[in-house]
Image 1 (spheres, one colour):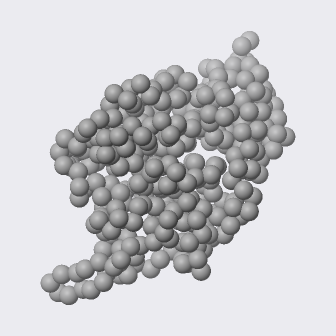
Image 2 (cartoon, helix red, strand yellow; image 1 turned 90 degrees about the vertical axis):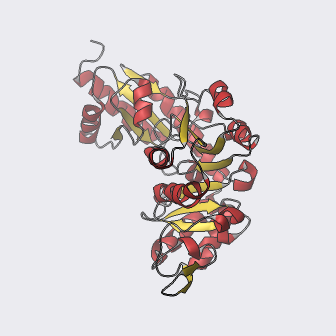
Image 3 (spheres, helix red, strand yellow; image 1 turned 45 degrees about the vertical axis):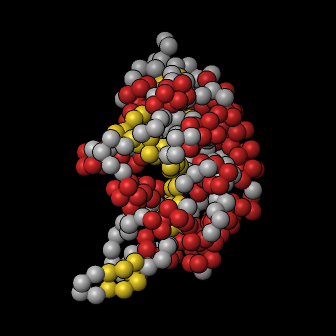
Length: 344
């Protein structure tokens, strides 16, 4: 069953070989695996890693740590006021010293869909590798790693109807074979003596210790479910409900929405603020009306700094959400707006 799940996941993301699927705990561990296993081995002082301003902390912090340890340079593609990336700046900062472009496919804080078809070729033109944070994209749209031109892809099970505590790093087989192990111990070795050890073949080389068999099988079941629905259908539903939410929330007094206003340019999250009201208070009032949202910086503090807000309120939509639930959110927000006297 474990091997079958690996094969299912490989097919789901368009991988050429099931051995390219490495089981991790989550997207964060997958990105750290690349930072430790590839970047620490191959990058030297002055080499550049390019990320963007809309990244989750898990795609910023590992590169800053490596910068402080190894003297690499971390550069950022800035965010424009509408929540999209400044591609003109991207063209200027991705250059001969760029060794890795590590970028999200979809912002968890704003829902912005990154135009990978425009940015990835910029890196490839300079011989750089590309790591895609697919935590948001893999659950919400069809992903083909070979069509994307990716070298690595990281994603998590819990965002795609699977269990918590299971994630995936996909990497091109030749790259994985060139990398050092992330952790040492059982199952990742070929031989061990008192003098030295040698490593097992990929994927075992990166899966030290007892595998998380149950959750890997659970992720395989989630992939079966999504594949049966059809990822094009998942995306169609998400566009429809997000478009409806953008229109409904825009009519609520005092609500400002962050990110692109075209549902085709974003995933199923809508971040917003209520004028003069802290997002935590908005969340608490909505909770009393049975509406659950997320409030805070969403592990994306650079996004909050660029927006000049302490936090945002964020509604998230997926295959199981309905327009009736959007109406319930809008009604609860209208009551919250009235409670705080917004606009009065």
